[in-house]
Length: 259
Ligand code: 13P
Image (cartoon, rainbow, N blue to C red):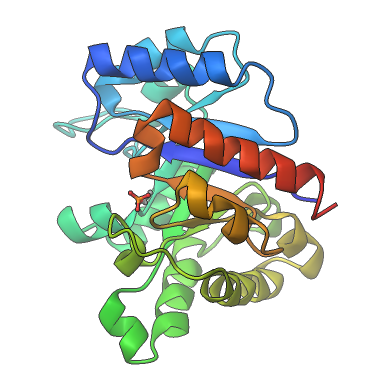
């Protein structure tokens, strides 16, 4: 059984004042989440503060990206040891917004992923196709390429420590989520690839999240899919009540339906 995982990706939202209020409300609303793991990924400037707000709480801290080298002349970047120092143990890798806006390549994403695993972090590798790729029947080709390149050179034991997130680009921030069947189809395909890259046993333990317009209202049907092990939430994670609503649904489904 894979413990459901819900991650809030705050993206470029949250001044210190807003981050304190949001993290505090999530902490207070989720004192003892059972049957679910919860991570929030604030922007870099709010990480240290949110770490303090969440100290002693079961909610864990993640970053939205990182540099793969431990230190050096890399203006504007943040290293994994810097993130570790403030209590961060998770990092998103290869989010589509970074692939598109910053031009992150599969090779760079692979470097980051390896560095994170070496330093005891849990990387969350994001993959997903554009609307055009889906129209052209290239969904599987796209996500397969991203997965193979992202995990290149990793052993089965390292793949076992990785989390995947399927985020179709056409569903991000659009209000149009993938249907449960669409998510399950791609995520089942990804799990099949993990069997090949690691082993069938390891593939069964790796969590594959769905992301793209997840809200408290649609979380239940998406999370009910056996292939959907949790959610990577953008917009709805900026509102404590919506985010808590999604976490509660994941917890309920995790402890009931899929056992
Ligand atoms: P939305 O939930 O706002 O669609 O964003 C999804 C996402 O990109 C999370 O990483």
